[in-house]
Image (cartoon, rainbow, N blue to C red):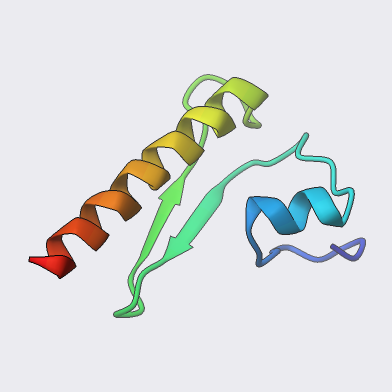
Length: 73
C-alpha cells in the first residue's frame, strides 16, 4: 500500500507476498456481491492484534465453506 492510501484490496496471501506488515489495521471492510459492506473494528483497542485477525480469518473461512455447501444443494 502506498503511503497515504486509505484502503488496500487483496487476500491474506497477497499481504504475505508483498511483505506488508499487518500491524496497525484499524478496520476490515468486506464488500458483498450486492454492493453492501460489512465493517469490522476492534472493540477494545484502536487496532487489530494478530489473534483477532486470525480469528476473523477462521470465521470468514467457515462462512465461505457454508456458502459453497449451500450452493451445491
